[in-house]
Amino acid sequence: MANLLISGASGFIGSWLTATLSRQGHSLYLLLRQPGQLPALRAQCQARGGNPAHLHALAGDLQHPGLGLDEPPLLARGISQIIHLGAQFAWGLPREQAERCNVAGSLALTQLASRLQARLLLVGGFMLGNPAHLAELGIDPQHPAHSDWDRLYRRAGTYEASKLQAHYQSCALARQLQVPYNVVHPGTLCGHSQSGHLNPSQPLYELLDNLAQGRLHGIPGSPAHWLPLISVDLLVALLASLVERPLANGSELLALDPHSPSLGELLALLAEELDVAAPSRYVPMGLLAALLRLPGAERLLHSRRESLAFIRRERYDCTPLQAELQARQLVWPDLRQTLRASARHYRDSRSQAAQCSDTGSRHGRMRDPDAATDSPHERFDPTA
Ligand SMILES: NC(=O)c1ccc[n+]([C@@H]2O[C@H](COP(=O)([O-])OP(=O)(O)OC[C@H]3O[C@@H](n4cnc5c(N)ncnc54)[C@H](OP(=O)(O)O)[C@@H]3O)[C@@H](O)[C@H]2O)c1
Image 1: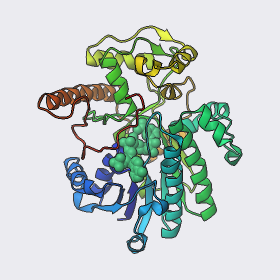
Image 2 (image 1 turned 90 degrees about the vertical axis):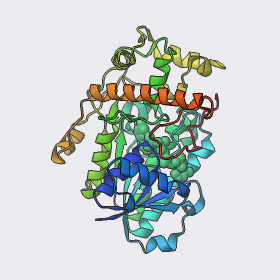
Image 3 (image 1 turned 180 degrees about the horizontal axis):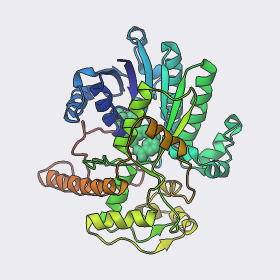
Image 4 (image 1 turned 60 degrees about the horizontal axis):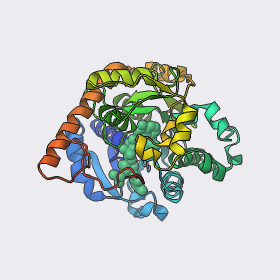
């Protein structure tokens, strides 16, 4: 069994991954900016069938120089792999904050992997597998160092720009330092296929919330627009399997269900499960983007222009993923059932949140009923 360092272990994907890896017997060193989260993370891990005794906290912060880690004791722990999930995952991030956490943090972890002589498992995002999108942004995947990052930050949302920059620069650094690495690019996460568990900070949760509150008056795009999805349990099973049996050095894998429904079908399915009306009219993407540029429109329409970039028409080649899943005996959960479970989980978490606010908890703040802590580091929302 291996000693692994994980960033982002308190997040949605990370918290499920720690349960799986600890159950498999790995010792997990969690880079936490709030190490006081450990007891709650251990309790959550146990509730999810993991082994809480295998979780250990390392005080650190992706935004700090040297990750804020006390490195000499770390060097003695024999860490053989680093799994990097930590990121500021939010709309409307200030560029400086996104670069410090998502880009500089990722580069610092790559350098740490070199010093520890550890393998690196990076998590990017599915837009990195969309050549048309990259070309529109002026990125040549064969020569990413030629990219004009300032222009990219002006054209793409800050979160996305920082993820793209982090990906290309971290991979280049890993190659330069001869750190063995793999990258997984997940689609948008839906909940756990059994429980439907979904954190309130997740984009799909926000979509469910807008739908349930009757705030969606149109379907962005056309019947061909879609949001590639993957359930958190399948993604976690894949990541855990890659820890045991990595891909060839430098390989990247898109992790999304190519049969994800179109956005219109997705909204109809979720609305049916929530027992609310689904929007039926399509709003052309260009018109919506232009509307959202108007002052106050994002707040009025409960949509972020930045989030529209993830809704596209292009389909992806998932043959390599299908082959890996088959080779690793991993099975796709039924996506439509998973989406229904996610909607039910959303509804239950809302009613729990309402009960909490009735009994005097903080007003207007949705909390994940399964969350390990009530983290203050919520998604940054300048319109809030
Ligand atoms: N969810 C999706 O739909 C999706 C899709 C594609 C790719 N991804 C990528 O997958 C990764 C994990 O996503 P997620 O959905 O699990 O995100 P998440 O729930 O928002 O979790 C983010 C994690 O990063 C940690 N973090 C944030 N800033 C940090 C800092 N300065 N130092 C150390 N840790 C910090 C958070 O810790 P705190 O507890 O301290 O806040 C949390 O554990 C991210 O890289 C994301 O870009 C996600």
